[in-house]
Length: 125
Image 1: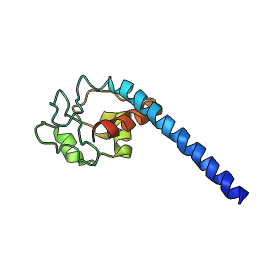
Image 2: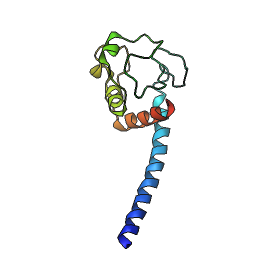
Image 3: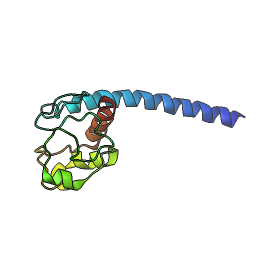
C-alpha cells in the first residue's frame, strides 16, 4: 500500500512538473517563432506572405495548401507534417527538401526546435 501511495505521489510530481515545463516551452517557442513571422502567419484565414500561412499545418501534406505557390520540390516531397518531419525540416530545410524555396538556414539548437514545434502545434490548431 505504501509503495502505491509513493508511486502515485511521484506520478503527480512528474505530471505537475511536465505541465510547468510545457508552459515554459510554449513561451520559449513563441520567442523562437519571431524568426519565422516575417514569412509566415498562423491565424486561421491568415494571409500568405513569402511563405504559406501555417494554420493547420500539422497533418497536412507539403505543397498542398490552397492559395500558395509552392516549389516543385515541396510538392513532390509529399511530406506529412508532424513533430518528427517538422523537426527534421527546421534543422536544415534544404537538406530535407533540396530545392525548397525556403531560404531559412535552420535552427541548430534542438531545444529551440522542440519549443517552436510545441508552440506551432498550439498556435496553428
